[in-house]
Image 1 (cartoon, rainbow, N blue to C red):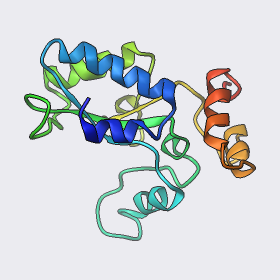
Image 2 (cartoon, rainbow, N blue to C red):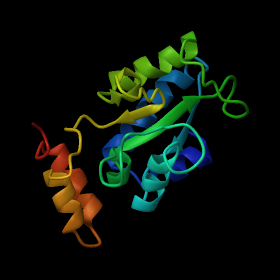
Image 3 (tube, rainbow, N blue to C red):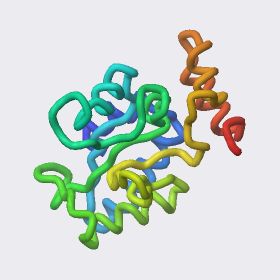
Length: 165
C-alpha cells in the first residue's frame, strides 16, 4: 500500500484495514495496485457531501447525513485501482476487468460493496458487514454517548455482532 492509503487506514477499524491490505496484497501479485481515497469522515465532512447537489453545487453523491454513514464510524473506505503501477492515474471505470478484480478481491474479504446499492450506487465504497445505520440505532447511540475511545468501542461491538439485525 502507498503512503497515502496507509495514512487513511491508520484511522479506520483495524479489522477493516487488515482486510483492505489483504486484498491489496493479493491484487499486487497480479499487477493491480489500490489507492484508499477516503476513510473516516467527520460529521461536518459527511454533511458537506450530503449537501452536494442539494444546497451546494455538484451532483448528489450520498443519501447519508452525518451519523448515517459507515465512514463516520471508521467502518468504511473508498478504494480505486491505479491504471498501472502503484501510482499515477486512477481507474474509475467500473466496467474494466481490473476494477472488477478489485471488487472481487475486496468482497472476498467479506466487505459490502456500495456498487450493489440500488438508490445511489457507490462503486468505490467498501464497508464492514454491519447493519445500515439508522438515527435510532445502537451504533448512533454509542457514538453520541461515547468518550475519547468511542470508535474503539464501536469497532469491538461491530466485530462482536452487537449491531447486527
